[in-house]
Length: 108
Image (cartoon, rainbow, N blue to C red):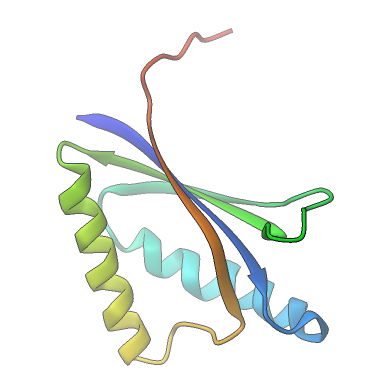
């Protein structure tokens, strides 16, 4: 089993509603993502001094998968169903996605 990170850089489309955006992300979107058995955890960060084309927030999803391309397709299908259920916020603007496979870790 390989360990992957899916990093999603995003911003809120309406700065006056950032609290609503963060509440949705933390309390609806991340739990929806954690429904997927291969998503083993998630952490969010606020990016310090983002550039003009960069997002203000970074979400990191920890994923275990033997076939990451298939896993990405499963995530897309899962999110499509959540959108059909009205569980994707119109406040979300994704600026970048990064897929990274763990190749080395040295514990302290």
